[in-house]
Image (cartoon, rainbow over all chains, first blue to last red; front, top):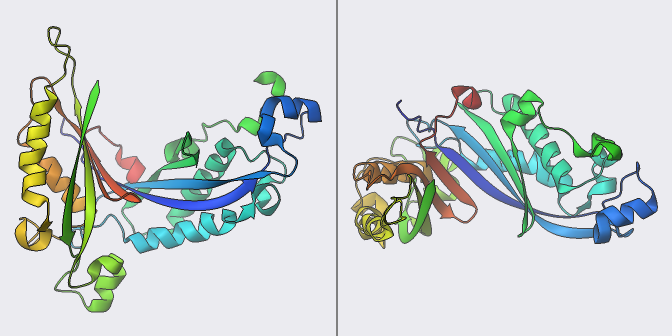
Length: 164
Length: 144
């Protein structure tokens, strides 16, 4: 078949935030055993790297899938502003009752961006395809936007410990 | 199976359209619209798809891929002002999207090599911005 050469654009952003991994469904001892250092009561922080990928046909005039500035401002307002230099557990309301593992942070960001895309860019012939977060240079977490739209991702924190 | 080879080239470009005002150019291209141009250390990763030859154990001789990248990308683009010296960017805006697509087209003309066909071109304009052109069919639903 004829290949579909639909370009994807990936932009990389950064935010620094602290978090503590502690599940209300577990005892203090279980939390310490499960999360180890990440359960430190005072929290700890990371310089997160966030990659946002979109796919679409470049505009025939400008050769751009979309102006970078529009994407940057959107990610800044929907995500970076929320997380940068914050303690995720207390400053990001979505984590009042769920554990801010980077799995859950990645899922939340993917959900927020996927849901807001049609409102923010109704006229842009492109779509969000992927969110990837590096918690450190060694840990990466990736969510495809289709997973969010289909609702096929399980939220790890919503799974009772006994089911894991 | 996939095999990836990386190459680098440093080049200058400017993204602006004659038909647009300064303000419109800035709106579309941001700092990239500055009329005198500016440069990047571009990194291109070319991924080929194929199966290892049962005798050599190789999908493709990487020396040939290196040579191909040298001839089609590095030699023509390294230390050049893309808009002036590298067609089609005398009349096509050298956005990351368009440069990636041009590299794809140049390589596609010279491939396959042995059983290896072009699978993906990834072009980094900076470490914080890259474009992928990939053969795999992406559903249009994704882009809607």
